[in-house]
Amino acid sequence: MKNSLQKLYDVITKYSNLLFLLITAAIFLTLASINEGEEKLPESKNGILDISNWNFDKKPTYTINGEIDFYWQQFPFDKSGKFNTNLLNDSSRVAVKTRKTWSSAGIPKKGYGTFVLQIKMPKSDMVMGIKTFRVKSACEVWVNGIKTGGIGSINKNEHEAIPSGLPLLIKLPSNSNIELVIPVSNYDHSLGGGITSQIKISPYNQLENTKTLNLIETSVAMTIAILMGFLLLVLFLDRKKKALLYLGLFSFSILLRIISIDEVIIYNLWADIPFTILQKGRYVGYHASVIFITLYFRQLLPEYIKKWFVYSTLCIYLISIAYVLVTSTYWSTKSAFSLNIVAVLYGLYMLYVAIRLLFSQNVLHKWIFVIIMFIAILIINDTLHLKGIIDTMFIGKYSVLLFFFVVLQTIIYFKFQKEIEAENELMGLMVNQKEMMIKEIHHRVKNNFQIVSSLLELQSKDIKDIKALQLANDGQNRLKSMAFIHQKLYQNTTGLIDFNEYLKKLVQEISVMYKSETDVEIAINAENIELDVDTAIPLGLMVNEIITNAYKYAFTGIKSPSLSVSMKKTESNTYTLEIIDNGIGINKKIDVLKAKSIGLRLIRSLVKQLNGSLEVRNDNGTAFKIKIKDTEERKLVD
Image 1 (spheres, rainbow, N blue to C red):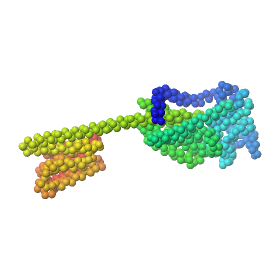
Image 2 (cartoon, rainbow, N blue to C red):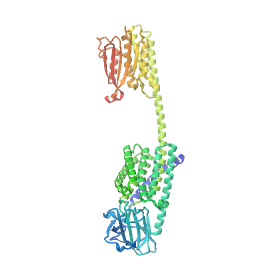
Image 3 (cartoon, rainbow, N blue to C red):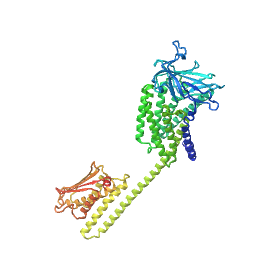
Image 4 (cartoon, rainbow, N blue to C red):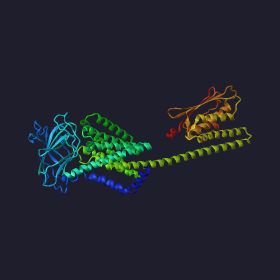
């Protein structure tokens, strides 16, 4: 499967520029053709439509536009139920373009009424018909006093009226003059009663062919949605990638949307399905598809799709799904306007992301640009269509093309994953090589320190002057303290030194070098302190100087010598090091902060280097208290 996807991707990549141009052109040509030529169509006036001169041979479909008579709270039936248009009086003229709903005339949305339109047909041997895609109400269709169709069950009583979502297809008689009467009742849709999409007049066989074509198109789209959904879920179970799960759930959401909008299939399978279920299915399918495609793009493009956008989308559309499920159809459709605004804003943000991708150097990003453009256009198209601003097809009509994009997205995802895995593998190798190099450097530095220390040790054997010998030993000690640091760095992979362990080894080495007649009791506490090399080396040198001096000078005549070393980290990212001995103390004539001895000058210099402070107490022994800042704090100061 993966190899097949790779081959398909290679073909698409080879002809990517051509396909990119063709698909982009198709999208924008579709948009450019919205309502094309409708301004030239004859419109009905005063409730009369004259298309007697319309040439159905040249242009076989005519869309009804203009004024249509409407009789509010009136049905053309007497008490016995007999049809009689003479019972209709005091009409309102409903002037509409794409929607023939009575609310467009300022009439209350809930209730019942009758639409009447007189049509002057051209003389022709063709059998003509009328078709409308969506009614969202209950209605009957009477042509020249004969009932020729209807959906649902009309009634003056709200609780007895039964709405339907089926499309209408009516065969017209071979008359030059037609009286079209449509009684409608609506209590379930906030748009108002009537016909909420185009009414088309066309040769009847063509309308039937269109119906068959729509049925095939819907069936194909549903099949693709099911296959893609299951395929993506199988791939998710195999590869454990969330993006594949979200894309699969997106396919099933679109499937629900298709079934709910193109009702022909569902009504054939379940003739008595309540209209409210279909209406809820439309909204739930739409909201869920937005959620899952957003989560998918977040997985695919985390640097473009921000977290705040994802969280906002999830919050809004999850609440919307819950609202649709618990409220009546009327109120769920009434709240659609606010969601339409959200949908437009969502589409605009996605267009913004798409434009950013367009300027990316990555060919995959350019393909995702086309896909996001298409999805954003679908969302905006649905929204504007629902409000009657434009008269286009719903998302269901684009489903086959949409699922071509789903397939393409799957291929893109696999390609992305392949590139990411290759990059991660390369980065992993680079990190490993870097770690090995750093380890090797620390190892060599440690060895160099040890070589120099050994040379000093050899050289010191020939030194007769006691003071010079002491200086050589002190230098050797300092080198060892730095060598220990690099040894610890070589032995771990974190790049940090466990300072507690380091102190123990350092104090042990110093105690071996400066043996005392009485063992010194040593307490070390620097637990959970880890330092980088820039902090550890200066601190190690200071500890070495202070402890060396303690062993050399502090414990003369002391029966129970003791030495404690502790280090703590404060909340302000500073460290406090304390070294305390119970020795004889420093000669009070010596000012530690000004003394010119090499050791004390070195300590002061290192404290300054670490942006720290030094405090010395000379009471019942000597206590050094050094406060320093960590590396990050020092960078801020610098």
